[in-house]
Image 1 (cartoon, rainbow, N blue to C red):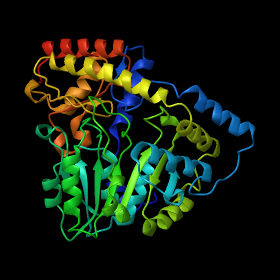
Image 2: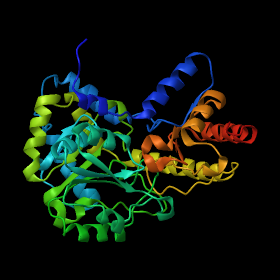
Image 3: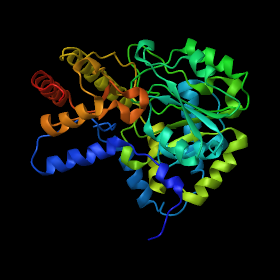
Image 4: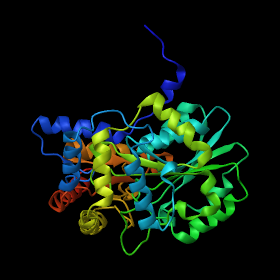
Length: 393
């Protein structure tokens, strides 16, 4: 039997896909399952975007594209960034990638090696830690605390930086908590990073257009003093309901771009040609589809928060962004993953246990409100009945 290298034993998973598989299997057996586990908009991709892909295929866009992406799309991304953030970015600094994870993969590979340290949010997207461990680097969790509004603390983050720190990963609006870090805290962090000029920064802003209650997205791109070491992660999956299209983009500082391009050439060559033209249509076409989707998520958010806070021994902070709630279940007596498993198997509600997002996720579960209001209400009723009738064994 061939033996793979030890690094592969260190790769983790995104358990939301395992929960999705189990939920799908139960549904195939005839069970009525409500999936609040997967982080995927339940809206179809807007028709004008789909039509752009169909037209691209009919127009003969069937071949390879440059590894960095077609120039019209990179120009479209640059224009969109300027429109939304007021920041000028050269199309030559942009890399079109097959999904946001690819940007994480590239950035962490660049800076992760034995002896290095990489800071990442905890609780946070599980692929951060998985990829850090794969490289042999030491993962250093940055605590994301409920009492801090699920925002990172600049002081605490800066205090974790050592001479071994190579990369700092940030995420706001955040998965899994829905937390949004305020501008004043980001200002403090950027000011403090001046003392650590050798630390690269990966800013995951994939939920940057999904904010509520008047919150405004504060992009790390708006800080010129860190642009020479900042990698921006963004894309189409959440904003335009294009998860299955596998479309993302990243903005790279000049010293790192060619390394990212070479990694693209060596791994996936380029992104699907027709999908790139669809991505351009998304950016240049009407944006009312985005506003409508976020407005609907806002309605569901209110239903989720009110419903969760009415459940026995559960409290839920109000998320300010993304489409997740991260309720505190510690008073129920249940550990998070056993509760998530029991809710799926016994109540027919798929959620994700907090520890799947990090060590500090214990005591919480994640619910995605990317499902219909009707299903959300039904799921909350089922959860309430289950908690009323079942205590942990």
